[in-house]
Length: 192
Image 1 (cartoon, rainbow, N blue to C red):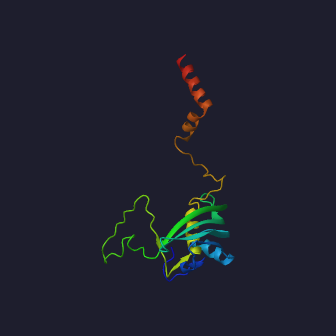
Image 2: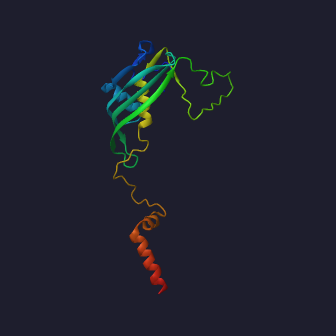
Image 3: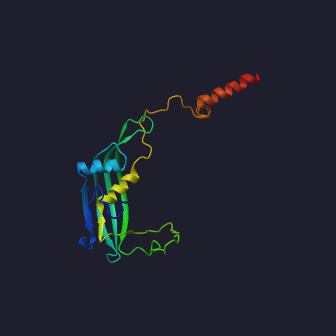
């Protein structure tokens, strides 16, 4: 999340006051300079394309707003083994809820020095706070992209030379039907 006073790299603010009771659809796309800035932020080699689309639906007499979207991106990450570029397509759906007065749900503002412990029910749908009556669709999509990225990108053919895993050969043999037969044969030959 971007802290207050910081401008997001991909900002598309939407005033919730402009969302009609039946909801509103949106489609946003990052410019090349925004893709470059997001790539730096997320330590990517490149973002070739990034877009999101979806709907904003008011709920609870417009005290809450439900964002349902889908993001698509073409990214290039660095292989964790070879450091070579690894291209990937990201195509994921996401949902978020925003609310105007959500401090009570999150425990309010504690007195200075007091620790706050949140206990969330498994089905809790805590809303994110609206900032000045706005939802930044671009920043929401950027945060979701960060969550969808492969944390350990790896080329399919990338291996660590000379690395063997203890017990891997035995496990492979025990899962191989011919390995089982070979072990059985060795057992019977040893007894005879």
